Image (cartoon, rainbow, N blue to C red; front, side, top):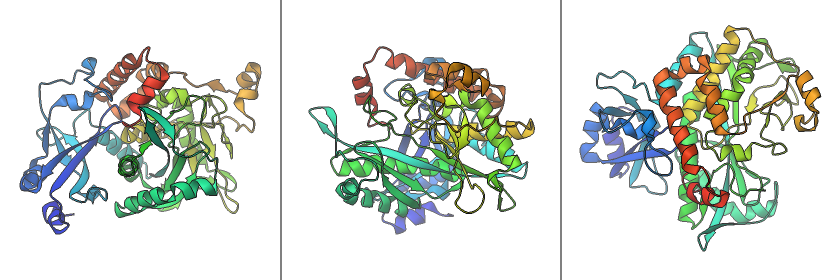
Length: 439
């Protein structure tokens, strides 16, 4: 797109929002009038470094060392420009942070993903990716969240009940060039899922942002709360945003060979398997995330992998005809910063390729049903049970740090530690009440 001002004028837009996702996983925007947009396109929006240390609830993580002194610039990515269907007087696009001289800011998540994509390309490889987006449609009654409907998995009645709202969401996503493959009434009460078309890693991360915003905005217009929070009701199903990915070279999908993983794809997945405990701090990025990751919840509480196995974090779905086409990473949710999550996944996969790692034998049983001795024999171990535990592993992971960069690693972990402290001792219901409309 050459001229965002003309594009916006032709569509009757008065404001253009420029957005970023902070280390807390929150999509934030600053809206500019068209009168000032030309300057923004030339220079970017001036921002204080503390914007990347903001906490989801309130305040700034002091230990992130990103405060009120200094300035960085948020430069719009014109390829992401879209008119907001629920507020057609506003357009929106995502941006990248740069220093005054134009170099990427060390704390910019999109820059980390750019580096990861370039490192993969240097090896002749491309990652295609897409998320499955689970969310709940809820009512707020007397200040408390209540179910919108009570049906179960794949219920026609449930899909009928929410159909008009889901249709509005799907139409809004298509209008924003996020193309919907399917909509499903999920297992939880009031729970639904959109799956979207795959694309490059950056495209997948951008779509993650658009879907999460759209779900919340359209639900609010209908008088409901559309939340993607990982666990809303303590004993019920949680919301995952499972990542599906495939590895390509020269337009050929390398993921499957015969009825199994291809050799290069296996090394890539083996790298993810190896770094999985640390990766959770990027993909399941809130204290609430670890309430969802539990045995029996189909989200992967043990480090294991398998074919057609929905109780492990790394699942390889097979095709009825032909080789596997993708891998599903289930321990991922909507509290993640998608740019950091995908940068971490790629960094881990590259490490697997560079070290020629091999996967252990796939499992075909629920890991939770195996004895500890059987788990040890099969190389299965529990994944971290808290965000704090995963962050400790992230700080010790040199391969992930090399891709994210030491400054971003420090600021990210500081924000996450501050999130943990902010929710320490908070009752589950209060935690949900505070976070439901943030994610």
